[in-house]
Length: 82
Image 1 (tube, rainbow, N blue to C red):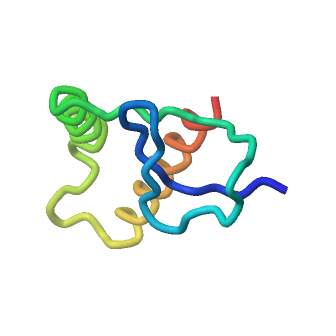
Image 2 (image 1 turned 180 degrees about the vertical axis):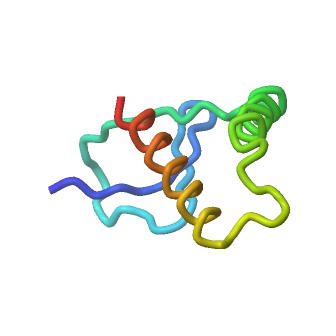
């Protein structure tokens, strides 16, 4: 059975963030999560704002706003699934 634990790898050691595994010795699979830079976060925000630009206009009925949001979510989901 696989169970996930969050840890920080530092100088050859794992420091558990929350719950620690009970076993003293075990096989592990490590997935490295690279931290996003400020520039990457800014580019992501900018792209999101550009994609949503103009979706909400004054006087637009709530139903149309909801439909636009559903359409955008569907597009994002298709992109995510690729």
